[in-house]
Length: 87
Image (cartoon, rainbow, N blue to C red; front, side, top):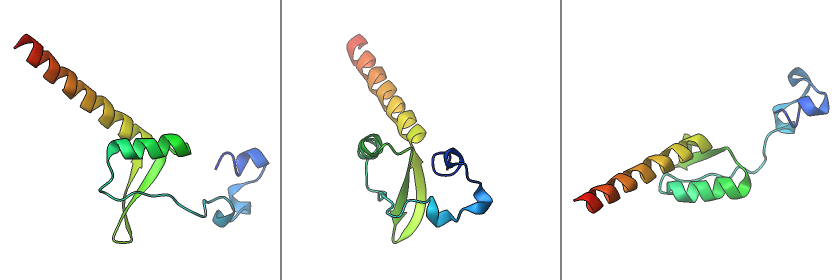
């Protein structure tokens, strides 16, 4: 919105949605992993990624969701390694 409307000196009421929306939306299915979503989002510079199942939007994954889950997983692995090392 900011790049396509405000920075071009236009106002929301003056521009149709089709003029600023993406015409080809990249999405994932629920079977995709967090790592796969992160790779897509990083490569494509996306902050949000729709999740589609049976031709219906069932959710949206944000970069914040992906980072939060990655950190949580890393903390779990660290805890498991510490337990293994200390017995």
